[in-house]
Length: 403
Image (cartoon, rainbow, N blue to C red; front, top):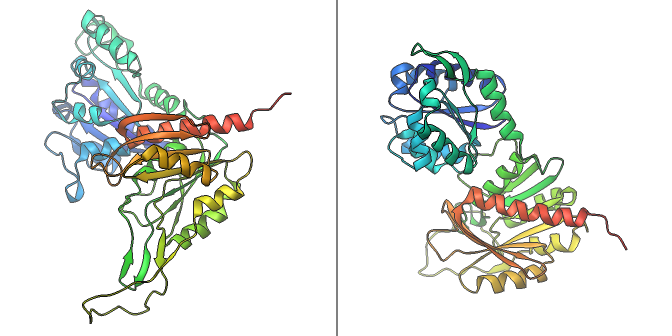
């Protein structure tokens, strides 16, 4: 099941967007809708809310439940953004990066594939402005479902009619199926923190939000992999189509990973596992009877190192190094010591990346000493880069040798 964001702009063909939504829903996909103000004058938001069973994002409704910012929420959660119908005005805005309404603001925040289905008067369609703006969008990777020819609402006859809903849906599904380079691969991802019990109400933990690991798991699923996500306690929605194993402590994470990792083709250890646990957790709440309290900690097993010792020759093991200084040097040392194939190193001392942030900036450290920088970007894009690297290593291991 994919998560599809449907943009509706102001034209008479807006009513056909209802059928596009219905076809996506019938195929088992989740749909969220964003509308321009003019679009709401052709079809009311309530129609799309009823069909999608979710709030419709408009200029007058920018917030979701619990005050969430809908254009960011919908952009982050969607696999593809479809604008149908797409007017000449919105095509121009997308080409120029204008963000003056709910739809175009969402488009700027969206990092995945975008498909537009234009609808307009025939003369507008063939104008130099529209032709030039479409050329710009195509160079940026936009997919275009060109309009058909026929009677137009304005009275003209010619190209400009919105493509039929089944044609639009088919084009979107092709985009979603376009990058399935991890089909038949089994991927295991760990994510989030662990919690090491002090007593029934207290624990030791860290600042990991799980966002990076969840982004990797979702991206791998979108590329066709069979994905198992071993997750510590996080406040994130479960990725669709992914098997999730929930754990709390480092020992529970170790047990879960030892059960699923041996059969995996690629193991990506994005979790921030606690190095130490309390030696003897109390079975009752500890009362604050003293001015000081000492905890005796014992070291947890190094899960990544253990997986490195037992990995198959054809298996790819990816580790993460969250550091505050000498990031690349520490990552290179860890890669060798833990017998990993790739390390993802990032500087968590920066407030704009790393823990809890929506963006990240990393270095990919390879076994041959290469260190490739991935500039600051949304974690979805960082996840794609990590999977590209892991897939490259897996292919090299699977390639037959000659001699």
